[in-house]
Image 1 (cartoon, each protein chain N blue to C red):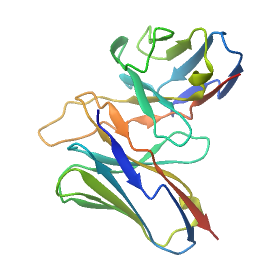
Image 2: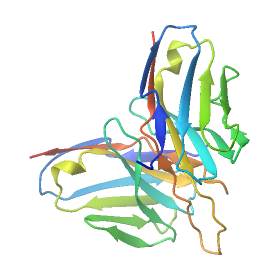
Image 3: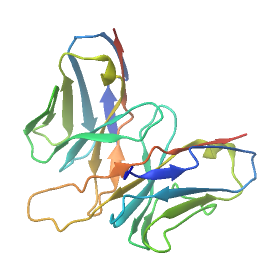
Length: 120
Length: 111
């Protein structure tokens, strides 16, 4: 399977614990995104990497959240001192940024299956 | 900030019926996207629209980019059980494709 993979698929943790999620993008994709999705809502942008550089972080990403993409391939998202409000689906997506020629275009983001976090 | 609204919030239809759902925005989008999310999976891109007034089809799906650039609609013809899922309208808002998603329309198809 050459799609985006995420591990673990489910994580149940107690409030105050730290958790770490991993995302393996499609190989050769240079852009990687993290989104958070709560029940009944669409995904919300959290952060974005171009290769190993983290170029934007949403205001949703508090100081307890940190993301890395050390070699420009897989990425990790860590949440420290989890709170019940952190319970959500965390989605990873990747895309291959290409030079756009004139007309609007969209470098399709391919999403992984997500990691569902439950904080008790 | 930018906000997308989708209607209806949910739909229950009989297999074989046509479906129509729409999306409106408080701001202009230069590209409209329609994604579908199956239970337990990530969203999958169905259709991308790049020009105001554009009508694009993908099999039984047809989507249109509104003239005002603040709305879009998606039609599904002759629905089948595998059409069940949540449909999101979305749009990229930066040069690096930060995507803004609507809240989704949940579709249930009764066999």
